[in-house]
Amino acid sequence: MAHNTDFSETQRIRRQILKLSALFTGAGAFPLLQMANVARAAEPDAPLRIGYLPITDATPLLVAHHNGLFEQEGLQVEKPRLFRSWAQIVEAFLAGQVNAVHLLSPMTVWARYGSQARAKVVAWNHMSGSGLTVQPHINDMSELGGTTVAIPFWYSLHNVVLQHLLKSRGLQPIAEGEPGPHQVKLVVMAPSDMVPALANKQIAGYTVAEPFNANAEVLKVGKIMRFTGDVWRDHACCVILMHEADLEQRPEWSQKVLNGIVKAQAWIQENRQETAQILSRDNPQKYTPHTYEALANVLEPERLDTALYHRSGAIVNTAWNDKRIDFQPYPFPSYTEELIRKLQGTLVAGQNDFLHTLDPAFVAGDLVDDRFVKQAILDNGGPDAFGIPASFTRSETITT
View 1: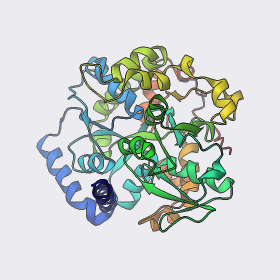
View 2: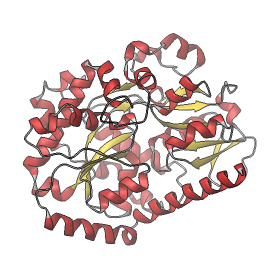
View 3: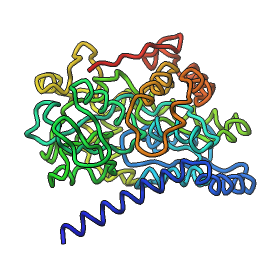
View 4: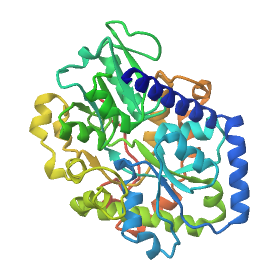
């Protein structure tokens, strides 16, 4: 019976991957994009409709809704719509059913240049907030040789950072077949399936957004081997994607959306405990199914046991003094450029020919529209309020 369950689960995941792969092609996206055009024509002044997955990457969108920040801007907003998979949220976005989503940052690259979707990254949702979690008996990256590790999707920063770490230890990532002693097989798995798979010893580890790493700690079925933010400093995993048509045809509306998001990030910085309560399953809004304890372990800086994680190797760069997850909305061009370079050297299964035709500097200017978020930052305390340079520029720091 268990074998059949595992098989059906594998088939379900495979169908989701195939569906998402189809959506991110010109032919697969076309019918949905046509639906979006019809919907926009029928409802040119559509309210703000947010799509999200129940991970901490969605925090600013959910807090802005909960605290009425969008309404304060004069926007009509519906309750954010929870999706269970990336395929579902992408399909709804392309079809125009939702008009603001958080998406894995490499996935936005695939959407714009793989499917020709007219969508733009308008802000970051967060910084860091992800990790590599492994079986309790695994103490060194080299011990992952010959095992299977789960990733949320091929087009994810988790995949990029994991492969960066594996290669630095002489391990080869593979997508098919049985892994040899110096190979690690990567499999795509929904975040909600990762903790049970680790507990059942179906995988040696997984890399994903919080609070699924914290969940493994709370349940004592796994431990964090490395925080991704300790490898690529202050990286973005998820970014906010909006329709280009809204940015062009409803600039005032778009500005108000970004105002709400930026105000939410400023509020979160000073209200970490309350943020965890808002996101927890105990909140009447039921934004996520997660416990307050797991969310608080991620969101509240004072809970970060730096000494413990330094001893275990989960944190190597102690001098950075970075938080487990942090919030600032500006999409730095240097990050987008480095992301493209990294993706071009990362094993990405499926259709990826377009990746090698991309110019990093071009993508940084074409994929991202920072006009609205920059104005919102300037109107809400300026760069200093978010701990970012006044120049809105930075250099990327990536270690092993």
